[in-house]
Length: 87
Image 1: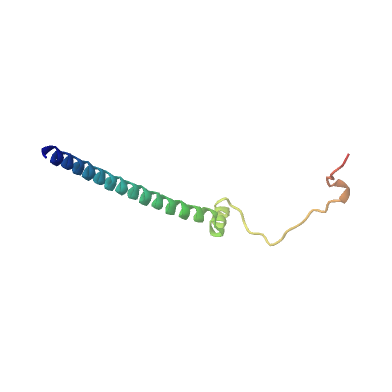
Image 2: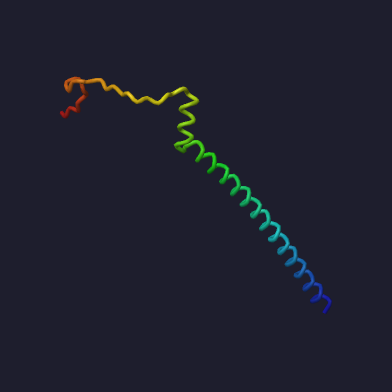
């Protein structure tokens, strides 16, 4: 009888330990997921800032580019253009 009580108590302690361990691991995973979510949001914001049209216009201003309204094209004769040759 004493052996049954001791075995039951031992199994109960193992189950409590397993439940506690699983709960702790679950909280760790939740913390990691929240951290990754925050990093993802920061990267998404950074991406939108760098690759948006507004960001491109700001970068061109920083590099000293100016807007032009007069565009001149250089006339090139057809004979001077590269042509694909087939053999």
